Length: 194
Image 1: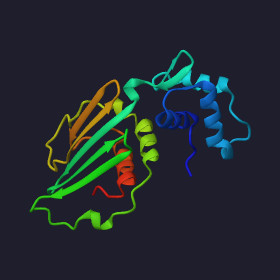
Image 2 (image 1 turned 90 degrees about the vertical axis):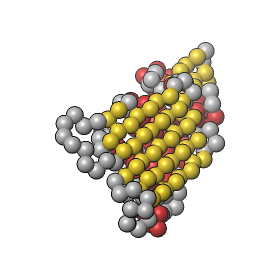
Image 3 (image 1 turned 120 degrees about the horizontal axis):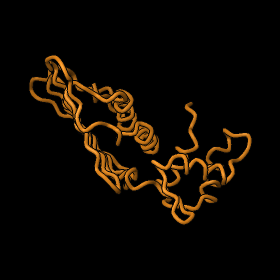
């Protein structure tokens, strides 16, 4: 079992309940993590974490919320794989719902991976993955500087937050945490992107 970082617990609480005072966040975090801690966290520790993670949190007049540029609203991901297999994942963070589409061209001569589908994962785990992967730090475009592009696996990602829209795309070139992102999508949807 992976260790949950305190700031991830704060994010989960704020995602679910909205803006809260530090004392309330502290109580909620202690309740969430009571099995994994010897001593409860103090409000001063929560305030310190919120201050250090100013890229994620806003503390306005004693109420903490997620930065608008990181407040997740919508994610749209399209992956066009070599051989005529394409996937689209559309995630609505507000309604905690997603859709997953797979389509194949006539030239795709491989069995559908959906036959190997698993059970869909937990939405909150996917939200934590999006925050830990920092998709907003992805470059707008990933292209190979040299050489010929042969396989032509292309992808597009659009992440909409309350304060900003982030878009990124690439062809046979990926951000460093690409595989972790694909695994997060697979865990959410229960479908394998291969």
